[in-house]
Length: 121
Image (cartoon, rainbow, N blue to C red; front, side, top):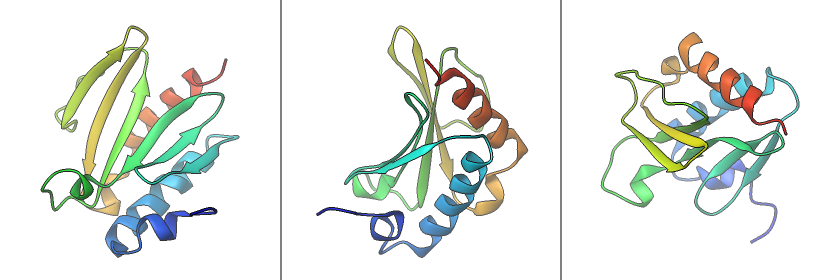
């Protein structure tokens, strides 16, 4: 399948598409960003990927429409994160379950801005 877009990715999840669109608007306000849609996720890239949107229900039993994963060089502590992983020496991946578009707030936009800033080579 070529030219798969966000609407295709969220074809059976209208709530997920609305949340994704809010995240995409927030990311687009940061500056130059490339969006890549694959079968498993939608990645936002500057020089490197810094944020990912995926659907947990495809992989585990979950009613959450969207998980936003934000890559940062340091760990952030917030009770909002479902999980924080350290997949490589320079990356901390912060996983945020998003149930509603209102959760894409100033705090999340700040985290996305930090990640975007670190995604330049």
